[in-house]
Length: 386
Image (cartoon, rainbow, N blue to C red; front, side):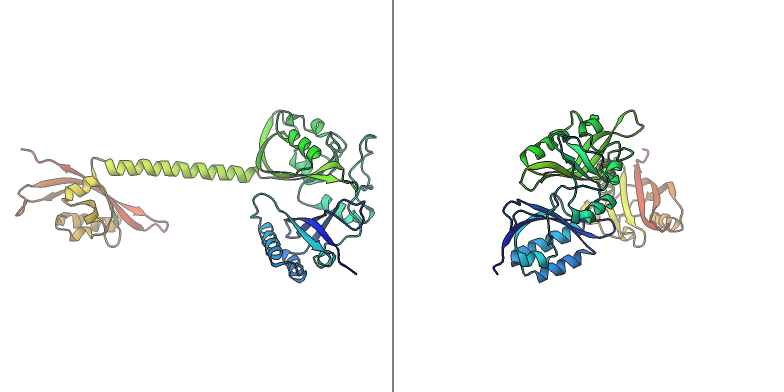
């Protein structure tokens, strides 16, 4: 018996309890009147599906592509879309655990509100009650919209919470525009129309929406990742849009705060660096243990009579320029004292006939443990009176 090939679109996701979800759309099947089948499968872990993938004996390229997509989806590192499309034989479909007796076609979901006459409700095939209960209990917000007016014909509680309403009963069989009138003027209704009319999915990342929460007079900015996916009946006609969404407001706000903090710190650093370099007083940073010069500004280098590059990394007390009195100040600093407005003098020596005086401030820079890791020094040369 010859094996038949089928074009299959696969969507991968993971629940909060680490169950791995595979949504498979079979774009062709044995029966010519069936245009597509939509099946959902859950695995205890992505490794279970990866083991099936290895055993399915796909081409090397398809195996590598699918394995990479599964790993990224399970690790929540996918940016963009989780849909992949491959051609599979019947044996490969069975090996992957994607076989199904019938597609998910409209029938009757458990106790839905009565549908309006002109539009059919989104229901599940008799053998797909597990799919219905999975969506109802899933922590992932799902909704199904039917017809050109986008009536809610299926919605689980996480989606009710997502849009800020209180119960499924106040939403089911009502158009989106009636349930969420605040969406008028926002792009979501237009996107739903395009998905329904053109059959092209729409994926959004960190899309802002103004929603009115229950018992709140105004609207609130919320951010969402979402997918609008067209759903077809057995004749290939689009009859609804499946919606999956996630509220990522806190993540977006946290990222915005982090970016703002980084920008503020960078600006403050730039300002401090400018002040450090252009200060009219001598400034230096020294290692607490070795008293090596870690940083020094141009004014301090000028006082010491050498270029900045020649001074960095040198031990301060070993430099010919440094007067002995400065060593006594560092001993006080090592004992935890902060030196304020200490007068340091340097007498005239051969080759330098001038007497020089400085006003010196030295304070410890404490690390996380409370111990000094560095010393900061600010020096002002005081001209001798004539």
